[in-house]
Image 1 (cartoon, rainbow, N blue to C red):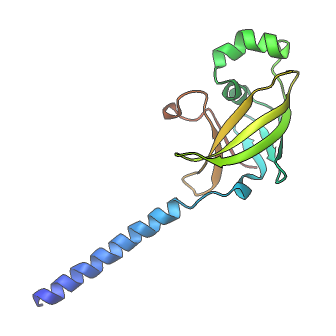
Image 2: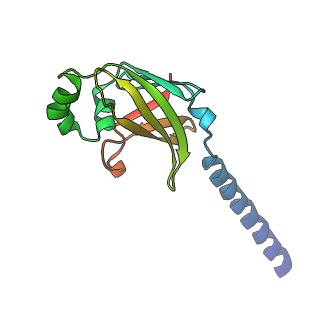
Amino acid sequence: MTVGKVGASIMSVACLAVGAVVGACSQASTPILAEEVTGEWCSGGGDLLTVEAGGRFDLVRLSRDFFGVLHEDDEFVEGYLLGRDYGGVQPEEGNGSWTFGETATSPRVRLEFDKLGSSVSPPSGELIVRRTDEGEVGLFGYESDPDEGYTVRFLRC
């Protein structure tokens, strides 16, 4: 084989390898659209979140984990806040409006509660939207540092 043919063969293999990597990378970074977050979402803790196309959401069967995410501090929720804002009873449901937006790191769904249990001043919450290893869209809530892993994960019901 001549040097020219060897070089061409190496170049062909390199192009195929780069093409495969670039293709895989572009597949993994498929943008997530706002329409993909509408529908029913279930968490492992039992939450049921219904995100409607018109910008409204309903949350039923609120879990202890997601309640902690909404307030960003589980210890604070257990004591003073739970007694002050909810009459000592963890709320079971809520509703409000949602918005979808991009940040520098990932898309997010912002939940603005009109009502959460008996609270007169319900919190707002944020869920990070990303694809799972299987390529499905998921909604992830973090109580504190995302490097420690998600506290609650919603997948399609």
